[in-house]
Length: 623
Image (cartoon, rainbow, N blue to C red; front, side, top):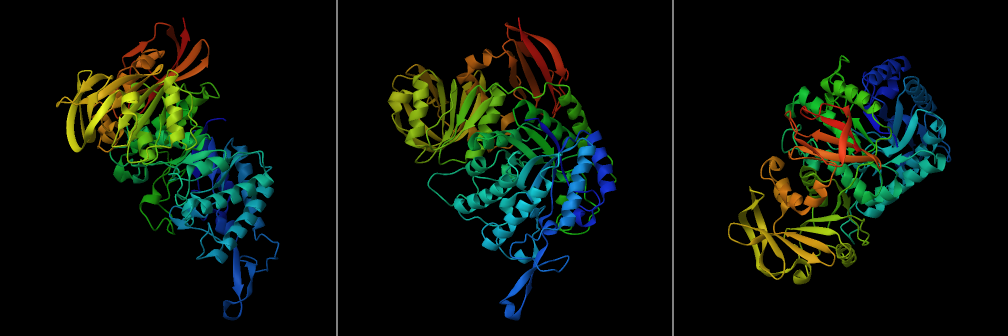
């Protein structure tokens, strides 16, 4: 799949009302400008209210009546769909405008939710748009007609269920969310099975096992759709509002959330919309830095695209939803006068850079797997683990399932084990089998009820302590940590470091042909819950100690915790290596190239000095 670089789009003059005021000439002007600034893919939104304007004409005491077309006022037959063919004609022209200007389209068909407002056919007011049978019937008819009429348009490269359709109505159970998703996806595929379908959702969960009230699940979206999506902003919904958004955490966390979705859902994923909310949280220059590092990092870390929210500022629009919130008005690549903002200049720069690189960009080399457990904040722990891995010099995948299927790897990290269940026996047994066959396992501790301590970890527990506060020294640097710990009595393990009271903090034990490491504190939770935690104590040194051999064998190594290395092999004799600066300041990197390699070409950036939120991509060849 080609990397989808672009933006989300509503017309500059009318926003969500654009289809009621469609202007093909104006659209073409906007498409031309967007392409000039690097936008190659647009995610676009047929407003459901406008494309299926069905209302109900009631009779005596509202006990009878008929469905009518809200524009023509004519009755809709029992087998009719109520779709407005004038709007279909406008959308067809819109597709032609995109094609004329070299822009590809991701079409979010069920746009019933946008920027805090619901848009639905009038006949469905006050109904649950997800679970109500009447709503589902009209939804399917609309989707069938829309796809049937427009499937031959060349500009369309992907269908999307809609925009954050989990916001259109409550799904109390997994079954309700599953049935809605399946119904819409099946309707699309029955008319066009040649294009992939994207989920279009955000804020999904992963199953907690046996609980059908988890609602919208990543696993179900991955089962039904072809592409998963995230909508990460510097937002509390992804715990990314803790520090400036041009520093490590905010700059890499959107990538980690998307890798989490990809790992849990088992399908490719991309950042479908991302932005910076409002200028109160950062300057225009910072927003340019944010988009720059997001695009670069999405590319090298194996996501299938990045789309900014959104094309145009909407400060001049004086109708809802734009009058409901100050935040939903100043998020564009261009301001209300259509002048480029720093985000547009970054988009333009990165589009040129990507077009000069190999296409498709080679897949990244994964060094290990983060295995998630049952009773934890899985997204939080996955994101924390992946950031720590990147700081240490590792690239991790995410694995979470209840079936016992574990991806093959040399390194496994089981972060922040907590509470009673930890994981199903099948998964635990599969993980230990990987270690017996030669893999390395790191378990970090947050009060979880582990078993077979002497056999697996090489120590005995002499009880638990909670609400503790300690320090430990690793590689000459001090780490502070709090909360739960085991009072450890070694029974064969090697103690690599102890806290100031002498209790073991990091242990190592042989297990079959492999090795089990145990960190006696919640590494991931301690760093993640602190403001600027990834730049305070060097928690990543736990990972680096465990994976030292893997890290040192990589073609290229750097030491700075704000620099992340990604290796993308091209063939047996050549790899692309990126060194990305996830911080708000310039870094002059000390880069060590493995003896077996040499730098043959710099594809992007300056290897001697990497600006804030930027990077360098080089080609290494074997000597």
